[in-house]
Image 1: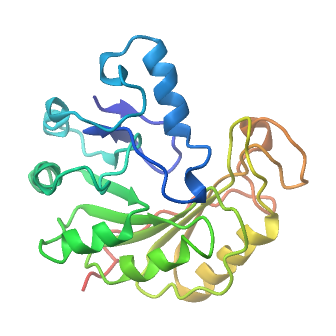
Image 2 (image 1 turned 180 degrees about the vertical axis):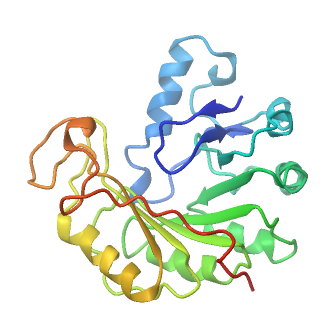
Length: 250
């Protein structure tokens, strides 16, 4: 089902699949896996197998039923481009997206090779925002090149959990960057300078910047709750959202 989201950069979540497997260090303390175990314990049928990949075709039509224009985060509890999700199911998701132009859909993946291969043979719906996770240099930064070459209206980076300084990045063709630290009991700390470096590069290269959270470690290096650490970077919030009208596709 679609659900009102607490994620600061979206409005609703839509999960036509749930479950995933780990592919890189950003997955180590996956919030979706933790939440899936909790929902399994609560007896929700969709989560009866915990975080095992599960296709839910009965959820495909849900966005059609919502008349209010909405920003949807697609598969907050999974990865739409997981290798075990067949192309025909992704096609069905894209058909719903294309048929509901009143909504905007944010799709985030760590599987950039599958993302590229899929859209090499298919058009990208104009109301889709495509993003890749960029948690570190080794696994995350190479995903940017794959994303840059896909003709989506909005292309974005989720640098969360940010695990190290990402160095100098080529952000050409990228419209939006989200930065955040890791939350949860085993959160790894994010250094303030890592976030500032991304912000500076966004400003220099014309990319909209969004600072989501410090997570479990504050800017002062102290362990607190995510709420207590807040969302301010250098004394203010950074809530930039991309301008879908101004963004230029290929």
